Length: 225
Length: 78
Image (tube, rainbow over all chains, first blue to last red; front, side, top):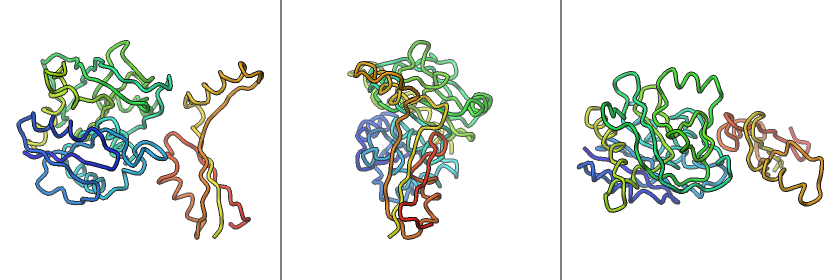
């Protein structure tokens, strides 16, 4: 099992993501944004940061990179993809995930540890199957543009199809996201994105290791695919 | 080359916290009676083929899910 972690100019969490991937017991390598070849890669992380300076809109430019074209093909073929923070924004801009991320309601950059509820999908094939395990994850969030938005009827449809993957625990919504949504998955369930940073919560040295569960779930999907 | 200006604004009904912050700051500066402030973006450009600008807006300059855009031709070119 080998992970690929994308690296754009302006990415800043790719090293932590690489470390988190390795902690799942798999190999991992960086994939430069100009690379188009994902051969030998079983799961992809689109990491956090400020790709291409976040010019225009967060993720708007990164989605046109050669690596993202490869990721779109990889995802279409059922490969598991995890987008974190800026990576989530990139996946939304690319149309691989529904919705958009807007400026935080309070206009402040949020940076704190918070509790997330992992929401299992109704069918198999969804990549975070936490089952009987503790349903909340203690994971840090750090972003200025994390307010999840989709039109009301689209939100209804997402919920009906089980596409909400993570919610902020009650009272924890840091940015005004619609229906406390912190992360969503695509319809097939192989692409998931979230604003908080599981890759910063994988080592007891820095507190919670709950983030590892997010990576393990993706790894399990990658190994099965 | 024909010049154009693209105005991009948050869609009606989408909370615009920047606009709200500006609106709240105005009374302190003595500007009363101003409401519904919305903050957007303006992009100026020169386009060989202005007919393709709408496609450009849909694909890159605006996110049609959350933003409306308007294209203004500056040289009277169509």
